[in-house]
Image 1 (cartoon, rainbow, N blue to C red):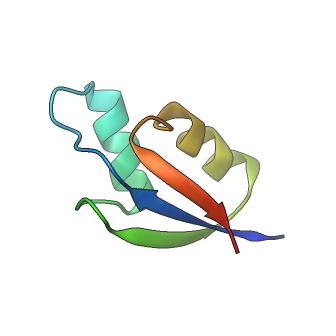
Image 2 (tube, one colour; image 1 turned 90 degrees about the vertical axis):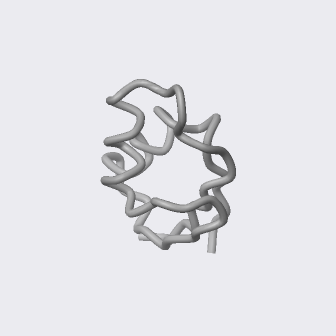
Length: 59
């Protein structure tokens, strides 16, 4: 499996609870924070739900 880097670029203020929980599940709390994950279907689905709040880069 390849890895992806997910970076939080926008705030979660005024977002739905589901989107906030998705960001928490990805391990993102602060703007500018970067986490690395395997590109499994579960992770890609979570990234797709909050794609307007994060940027994604393949490693």
